[in-house]
Amino acid sequence: MSESPDWNTIDTVLLDLDGTLLDLHFDNYFWLQYVPICYADKHGLSRDQADAVLMPHYTRVRGSLDWYCVDFWTRELGLDIEQLKHEVADKIAIHASVPEFLTAVRKANKRVVLVTNAHPASLKLKMHKTGLDQYFHRMVNAHDIGMAKEHNGFWQKLQNVEKFTAANTLLIDDNLDVLKCAETYGIAHLLAVLQPDSQKEVMETRHYSVVKDFVDIMP
Image 1 (cartoon, rainbow, N blue to C red):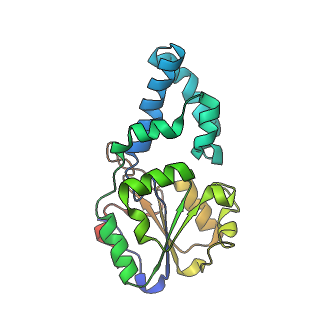
Image 2 (cartoon, rainbow, N blue to C red; image 1 turned 60 degrees about the vertical axis):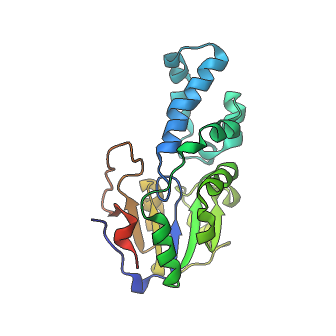
């Protein structure tokens, strides 16, 4: 069972996208399966050889804004990353009960804000496929802020574009580094997603309360 927050003390809900509202299986498949296949084909490599090139490169930039940047990877890999994402966009999927949850939060008169590291091109594709954009009062992209959510200083910079009271704000995210950074900033209500990728095992969420199914935490 998911652990429901105290909705009486919350007026703003900040929501991550990939792995939180959307199944992370799309992104994991794309970067760990499809991109290596395409890279191997382009360079005449075996799949193992492609993995040997790509995986250390992923590790070097993981957690930085470049990690989430379509333009960066297009330059680095010589592949049209945006086009490749469109080719497998049928794998984009919404986690269970997300539309119902977002509807309930709006009806409870909470401000609903998407705060994502996803590159604008990825965000546009995912909103087109899912229609989730209709539920948000605002969508904030880390690329516009200038740093990824897991970096110290992000949440202060967010205040410049989206005013919120940390003590009355709920953040739901599948990235534990993001949650830690938000916790340090003072955001009072934090929930981790138990199973970001429906095809993988549940996640170790440290001391954070968890979301297993959004239907369990509706206001």
